[in-house]
Length: 244
Image 1 (cartoon, rainbow, N blue to C red):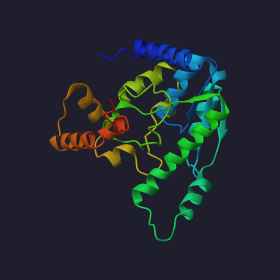
Image 2 (image 1 turned 180 degrees about the horizontal axis):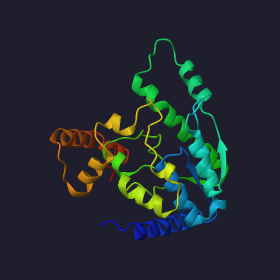
Image 3 (image 1 turned 30 degrees about the vertical axis):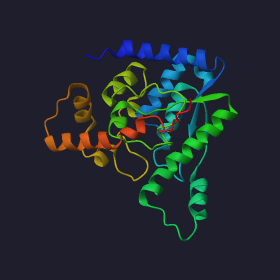
Image 4 (image 1 turned 90 degrees about the vertical axis):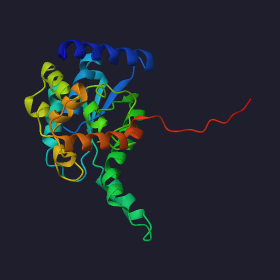
């Protein structure tokens, strides 16, 4: 049984403790997409630090069809925010590539979240901030994140919580339903998260927490994704010389 209120309160206390040890007067800087993860992460930071110490950064790439959701969140929380369009930065980098180098589809897909993370750190270092990582356990489990993109950050309030658990906490925080229960879309290829993954978050969350799953083909896919993407959750491999 998930004790949503206890976990929410413990997470708020953890955020306060993090800032006590890692910047007593610093601000939390969070990329705002308008989805459940950034909404819940931002709301937790507001409860922990106060709205005056939370800065939202909206980063559309050209025209973002659902940017109204991001503005709904910053207005609901009453936090300071910036809108920074990253399209020119992405286009500029792509156009700077030599003709002899053809960017792979994966490179093009992962470039926007990496540019967005660079943007977040530029804002953070200019505003005495600490960058909030908004990844959750469900997506991390199957590698549904971009290394050095949305998988980066200075502290992570949600990375040990499943999607189902985050939804419960979002409701407790009083966030609008249209933010908490918004259909997750990766913002990269136009498909929903579940379409990309090949299984639902409900199936994944149940498997993570109980080990139970009805469809063995989905179990195999989840296990394969988990194994192949474990490197994203590990520290950078480093050589240690044997020096006496």
